[in-house]
Image (cartoon, rainbow over all chains, first blue to last red; front, side, top):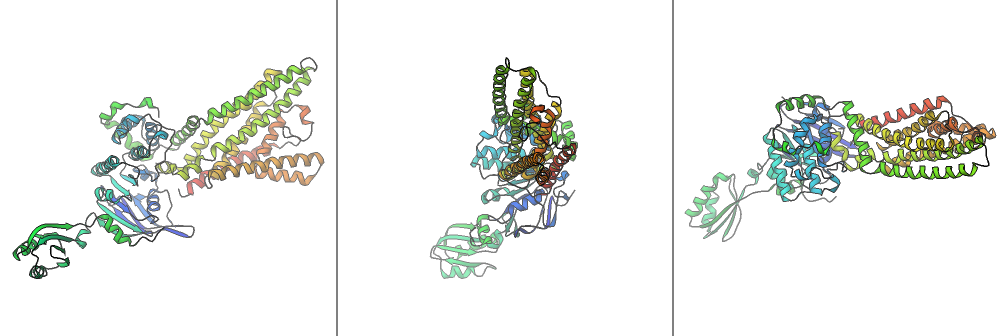
Length: 307
Length: 309
């Protein structure tokens, strides 16, 4: 069994006079939900297409499940929800899943069991015979999600899977990502909805100008930026002086009733509280300030250069 | 793919272990070329049915045949008491040639217009992404679509051109000698244009692909006229131009050979007309056209196989 389900090294794609992806190097483990983030035009979709064999890289190499990308054996074990989720709209939902299932090589009797279950799972059980051309955007996205899972893939690529969905639909996608991960599949999620990524993924890569510029365990960036906001009364200069005696701790801002500290980690918070109380301060709240994925994204990407 | 196949109770049933084993075996190799081809051909034909392309084409064709029948019947009735049987058959043959010519144009347009969107449209909309990432050979997707369209065009040629010949027989009891051969040539003309359109649509937009094919068709058409005129007036340069046009696009040469096979003698002697043939393209032209059609299909497959999607 391959160590990585996705192993890309130095993937590059040049189009006429333009480099879409400069250097895509990343590894994704089995059973991992992996977020792939970047601003518009960063090369996310081209990267996904290279990993799926839809676009040939100019240089570099990539293995999926230990085999070269684009091989038929690999494609048999991969599912893909494209960004624009356009399908044969003259088919009904169940016909579409049968069609895609057959292209995966699945037998009729397998599909007879699986298709209704998938449609039920994505909330389209009652709509199975309805032509897709009558579907709303959200329904199209749901049926697209079902088609991506029809072969029970080992790697599921989801390109903006929640862009057309209401909150219930987004929760459905999150649940499905968790289910897929629980059964051992790798989920590769490309999305602009950072909150969704933060809730769903184990790791996240940030890509800009066709290069991976940051790779984080979900929430691991908190250690580098941990701050805590304290509301209190009777904050004296002595209280502040006591703070500076704790290793790695620094006062960011302070006023009469508010104190913001940068702390090495949250383990030192009990000591901070004890010293403040000892110095005569009355504490009302101690709130660790978490850096959201969106804040990390904006900080990493820098100011919006425009399109 | 039928809705009737859906068993909603299966939602609550686990998949059988034997089903899982079968799945594993099948997944290892994908559906295979023949199954892919069959499913794509079926999907293409079904699309034509569901989008009412076939229905509208058949209704238009029925209108065409109805008008032809009414016109031919009027002519035959008018000549019944004044002309002998030979003259009546000649007249019926001439009118039939006109109808067959119009029918071959309709079939050619059908070939170009129905297929120009199939690859270009799916590439532009992204519909192809979910399909091309399945364990299938890309070239077999193209071949499957081609087979679906050929199926459609075969029905259309049989309905329109076959119907025209049947109506002639009903009105005049005259059946041209080489009907099957002529229908095959008209069918080949449509298949040739289909291959060219599909090859274009792997690289260009749907509109550009259609325009490209119709442009080549027009070039062949005017080349055919120039060649016939040159042959009639013994202008070798015109004949050569016509031959070059036939090499670039042999569609008109196929029509002229089909026309030669079934035209009544009087029409053949009438000189230059779009409905008849004074210069007969050789059998080698037919072989060339077959090779052209096969090459166009291969080019479509290779271009689609190699392009980024």
